[in-house]
Image (cartoon, rainbow, N blue to C red; front, side):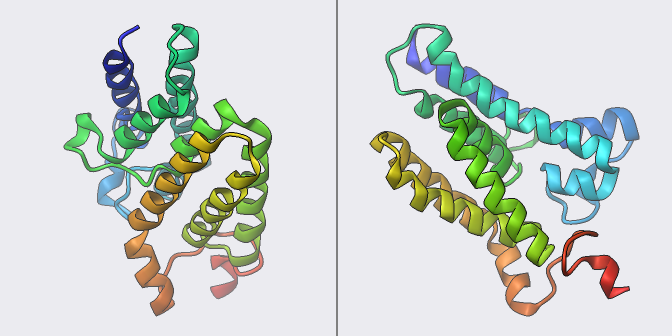
Length: 201
């Protein structure tokens, strides 16, 4: 199977802007015009609610899973993560909405789920612990992905480790505006956890 073809298919899968399409088709809202303006699952949860956010999250994760499995299903010799990365890039730079996408945490998690599911569960556990402690999705995502990058050294998969570090730096870079708000103490909190937004009201 042509590797370029797999990369293109993975990119097109990753480009599916689940939150934007769900908002427009089912709620007649463009989530890019509300909240953080981001196209990902977090802003979908914030603007459209739990049901829409959960669907968007599942789709974003599955984009990474399916793209990563493509070379396995089609008998290619390339390491699956190289194809999975194109789904991540598609999510960040989606063809369908002028290359302005999300921050790729969920799609990256899907790639990890396809290759190292136990590793992914640990990552999710770290994310949830930090989220419960801080009630801030962005800091939870940043710290969890850095933890995952460090933890990847314990896997017997050097290619995965190299790529996961690239993805980690990409995700941190995509959170640069969140980092500014964290420094200023103005970052949004979720309505649950030890420091939830409900406690500020």
